[in-house]
Image (cartoon, rainbow, N blue to C red; front, side, top):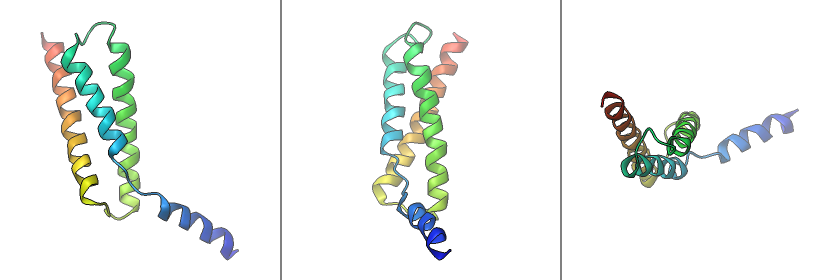
Length: 99
């Protein structure tokens, strides 16, 4: 019985938060929103990217909470850039909706 309970703990300990992919996705969304018309056929690209980035962000927050907020300095920078990028993308969408 101890073998079965020890295996999931080691798998959870190996899982570390990594904000690199999420930061890349948010950066891609921000680039698309900056250089193209938001309400054109490009919405087929940025809308799923934004949804996937939001889902990946939620997943990374869960992993981060399990690790008790232990990350390297680079990952903290990516976390901050990811959230700033999400805010910038939402501001761009709101501005386009108002116009």
